[in-house]
Every structure is written in C-alpha cells, then in structure tokens.
Length: 315
Image 1 (cartoon, rainbow, N blue to C red):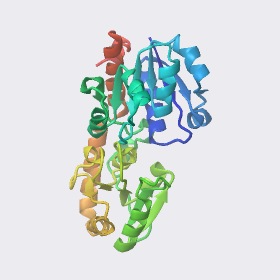
Image 2: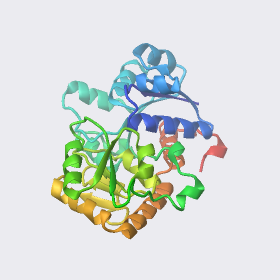
Image 3: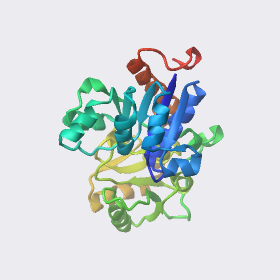
Image 4: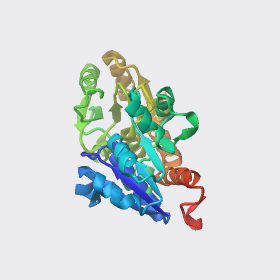
C-alpha cells in the first residue's frame, strides 16, 4: 500500500510543515509513502519535484493520491491516472464558480478540511458534506518542548517590565501585520515580527495572531506547545483552537480592542501562566501529530476499503 503526497508550495508555510509532520508520523506507523514537493520541500527535505511528469510517472505505482494544495489538486486530477484522490483543504476562501472548478471538485473521493469552518466553506461551494472529513492540524512533533520544559515553559519578558509580544512576519494582505503594529503601540507592548516562531516564542509573553481569513492557525498550535497564551482574531477556524478566556483571548480586528486584550495579559502574570498551561495540555491531548496521522490514515482506509497501516500501527 503506497500513498503519493503532492505539495507544490514555494515557501515553508504552515501547510508544508503539516505535510512533513504527516509524512514522518505515517512513516513511523509503517505506511509506505512518496512525496512530490515544490521548491520549499525540495530544498529543505530533498523530496522529488512535483510536476505533471512526476505525478504521471508515480501515480501508476501508488494506491492513492493526497493533494495538499490547490495546484497539487489540479495536477492530481489531470495526471493521476484515475487513482483515488484525497484533497487537503487548508484555506477558508470560497470555491470559485464555473464549470472547470465544478469538475475539479467532483473528482476527489474525499476532502480533508483542517477545521469545521473550512468544511462549512466547502459545503457552501457545493461539495457534498459526506465527502468532507475534518482532521485538525497538528503542532509539529519536532517543536515539542522537553518533558522537563513542559513543567516550566511560560517565557519571561526580554527585559524587566517589558511585555514581549510575538506575531508572525508576513506580507499577506489577509494577515493583520498593520493591526498588530498599531495595537502594540496602543498597548505599550514590545512587538517582535517573527519569521521563526519556535525560536521567538521561547522568549514571548504572548502570541498575537491576527487575520481576516483563517482556516485554523497552525502558528497558534506552536504557541500552545510553548505554553504561551494567544490573543487572536475571532475569525474562521481560530475559535476551534483558542478557547476564549481559558487558553487565550479572542478579539475583533479593531486596534483598541486588541490593545485592551494585550493590556489585560500584560497586567496579570498569573492569568498568563494559567492560560499557557491550559493551552499546552490541550495541544498535547488534541492536536498531536500521532492523532492527526491516525485520523488521516482512517480516511485513506475508508476510501480504499482496506487498512493502509500495519496492524501494530492502528488504534
């Protein structure tokens, strides 16, 4: 039994990290796989290039194809030699209308949505509900803190009296970079625009995760692993991850409301500690790589009508 993963991403973003995490976990469970990747996965992990030629060449030797982004979906539909296809849907954008898009979305046997919100978007776009399964993202296993660190992992500020806020550095117009800058100015917080969240979260008091459209928010899972509370936009799939007033604070995308949430955390270290610990417990229990891999393998098995994992890997 062999699974062919296809991802055409040019940058290592949340989706590409999820592909690597899924591949590693399924490999540990005994699942035979092959990955065709875009420039991001090729440069960092040495996978073969994803192209129409490589998809056609390998599809005939695989039992099932798993497309992890929009272009991979197209390649699999056009060149997958009729093999069963599963498509991961990570974004909350509406499905485009038109005959070409309608045909493309009829072909997959299943869609794996990363949140209930994304599943609703697929349904609104005409995908039958019984073709969609929700499998939440996982916090990457190699970002897990050590056992010892898990008991004392709530970071401190860089300098005494400074409230340090980390937010993803991105130029994506749908993300809230400008909102983050203005809110931190109003709150008097030190903002770090990070291109390496696992590194910068070690010294953070809070994660600020703002967006106008979000499938789930994999950066939030990293903060939860680090025991860092999150202030995040109440949009898309984010409320499925952040439990308001328990593991973080959900806010409207308004600078003053965001600033008020930051000031609340800045003024209450006990609240930050409690939220961080609850967040860590939640992510370890409900968003682990093994849980994601087993649920994904169950979708594969359902489509193929037979197990894809050796007996020792099933639960």
